[in-house]
Length: 197
Image (cartoon, rainbow, N blue to C red):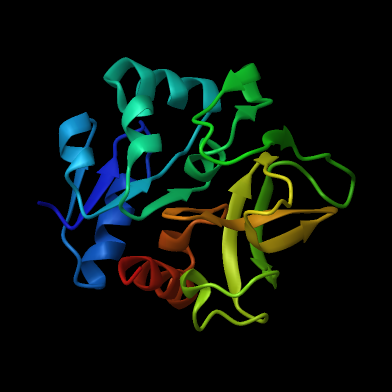
């Protein structure tokens, strides 16, 4: 049984995620095999790109049926977090439905271009082991054009013209809109916290 299964959703950040886990002493595999994913102790659902393409890839392999049934900790990252919700406005895409709510496009302005790209701090909403030792002055790296609304599942939000969910959790399903593997020591702290859930 692998300690962490990284779902191969077609993103380009798989190797950097493996390296980040390796630095924390965790073994991982990258897989699109539903059985290997279902047998892992923890699961990462990364995502880079478009919601429609990512969901199509998950459906073709039957992973979309495995994910909602998982009882082990799962962490969705960036697009992977968005896929946990019911629907994305990107490509009018039905998603996994693990979390209630719809993903919408960020509204651009002269001062706030879209995609939202750069370092931001979190506004904590609820205490959770996933955010242990992450402070209000700690910066994390974001790059995205779509976002989840603040909801009952939101542990922390971020403001970019509007408030949106930056960290979510419902039972064993967690998600972060930022990229922990690109967020230095603070991102490593979040991954370490996930590994101890």
